[in-house]
Image 1 (cartoon, rainbow, N blue to C red):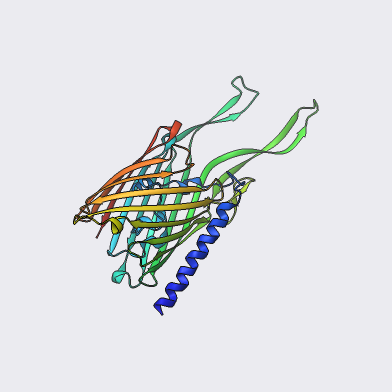
Image 2: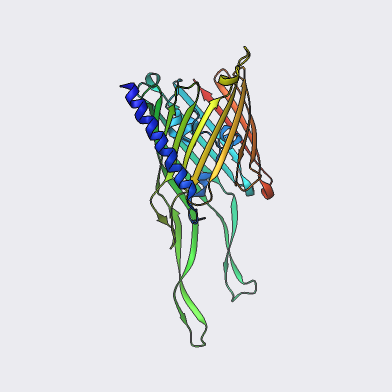
Length: 344
């Protein structure tokens, strides 16, 4: 029975590979047609240091930010992570995840995630040509973005795991004035009535994923679909969340070259991602771990807006871990991320 299931899964993976190749071969002309872009920003430091190439890696609660299926193999009862991302333009992204695996995963793993953004304060103005300055001062205002998720993952066999997450997303971009009933006055000048609209959306966003252990040493395939949603809109224009389909593969290279009798691993992970709002990306991540304590990481992603490189390190001991990631980001200087983890 297990052999039949494994065969079915392998065929599914190959089909997914063919589908992915077809998607990548097509021209991607619909660019910049999505909203809720904060959902695309990686806050987890380990993921960022490895260029977000984590689709096929076994993760704990952090899997909710990349591939929900990656927490299906969680061996501990409890895992929690908290991340802060010093993003461009002084924007701060925060992420919090927690996962619980009762009965050592026999009933699956349930997880919860929170993502929020601090955009800072903005100085509001409104055009008014009848005053000397040409605008009215509308005061200080703030924007907000929040995503609350619940996910579930389970190992269906000793090689195959699945996972899914649903997130309630809320983004509030404040109020704005829009023109209505545009017409010409007695002097021929165009005038219009105005109305105030609230730019707030609250869609549901869905994530799905699978992972398949091939049985050949530590070789693993992963597949994830993230940010699937219906179309929403603010005042007029409709848009979707930034949908992304990713196919990944990973392996510990020490399985091929040997550890030399020393406790070490060299993990290589490669992801290929297809987006609905910008060109495809190839992501490569490397992690060298020694004594299960110190991890050195690096990654490269093409067409990411910067030079594509990322770096990081991690330290873990006694169920506690701290990860750091540094990403040069071209004209936007640098992006730094930090993550603290607790596993019991």
